[in-house]
Amino acid sequence: MKIAVIGAGTIGESIARCLKDYDVVATRRKTEKIKHLEKMGIEVTGDNKYASEKSDIIILCLKPKKVPRVLREIKQNTENKIVISFAAAIEIDLIKKIIPEAKVVRAMTNVGVIVKEGFTVYATRDLDDKEEKMIEELFGKMGKYEKIEEEYMDALTGLSGSGPAFVFTILESLMYAGLKVGLPRELSLKAAIQTVIGSSKLISETGIHPSQLKDKVVTPGGTTIEGVFELEENRVRTTLIKAVEAATKKAKIITSLLNREFQE
Image (cartoon, rainbow, N blue to C red):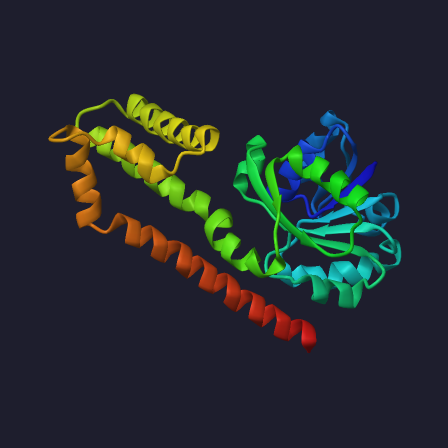
């Protein structure tokens, strides 16, 4: 299977790395920035037409505004090929207007893909079962994945796409909290990181609801209830909900604006 990753920036390069066991060609305007990928057996080029022509699957990792131009550039090389777009806010119907003969998949992942722990969601209506299994094999190399209805893409952009920034903020806050109560910086950060990893893994592997697990930690008159009280009094849950809601709202606005631009 030959794969083209067009737009090997932060996410594109990470995807190329995850898929290095396949025959991968990665493109970027300034090829010197991804020349190191050649040591992994990944071909590097600045020629999108060449990359799309030689590939069976074309993965677009572009800023939304660049998508129309690049699609027109590679259009002749997309017929009956699978084109996976990771471009934010660009709907399947808009992509199909430019490359109607392609089999289009709209996908989104997050920065966890850098360490092969991304959460990739995708929507498509063009693929048969065999083709879906094939792309899920690719997404599996990048972390967890799930097929969704396209209507959920903006909401998942707000939760999963923007979510790592919220988690990093929480981790940083926990580290500073450790400093405030006298912990060395390195130890405080390590404790905060492992606390988040362990808690997430516990939910993932047991399937127990977070509220039930929280109740297992909170004991009458103990230390944890004092901290939980402060969190509730300062509306931490409400703040996080509002953060995801704001990011989702912005994603919807961007989608609407890009839709309008495509129509024009």
